[in-house]
Image 1 (spheres, rainbow, N blue to C red):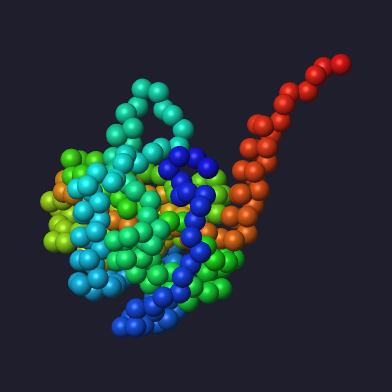
Image 2 (tube, rainbow, N blue to C red; image 1 turned 45 degrees about the vertical axis):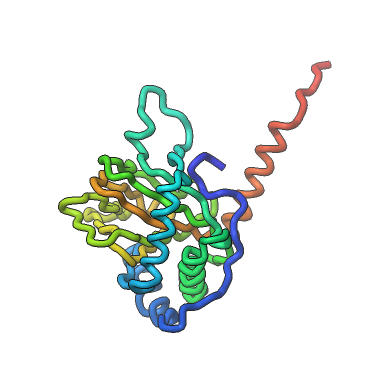
Length: 252
């Protein structure tokens, strides 16, 4: 897998639901229709002030404790500063680590939401996901240039981002996630406001960028895998690994 992709060791999805959310209604009346019509969907006030604040406190502590490291890019571009392309700091979290219970709760609710979308998302059959990527843009004008999460068929089909930024004013703080939907002359600008969940297709239908952030910007991102594409990608990776390990044959 290229650097910057979710780890190969990913989590099976638990099925925990926050009782006060009508996740089935959200899945069937908002998420499914909007993904199918627009390719993206966002839900505001997703978990509420209390849970969102607990998640924010954990992520902020991880940042302050130095647990977040520079995000990586696939490939190597000579003469181009990595920070000009991607300026976030990240850590991979399963949500089961000690002290990460708030993150685990967020993941379990998103898992349940995606499961409830069921077989209504076209050809996709989702049963696994990546770990969560905790990300921080430090507020020094860092962003992430236009890119596609899954340009090569690695299995990722849905990107979910949970934002953690209170009192965010995009006119002052920047940090907008701009989506360039395939086949459209319009862009979609998503402000990274507190307790907002964004979902969008991970493939070439949704090139996107994170515009420069001038205040500390936090988010959790998780990717859901289509079972068929993921299995094919793992087989391809296995064949490539085996071919590199084969000793050269002697010429007769």
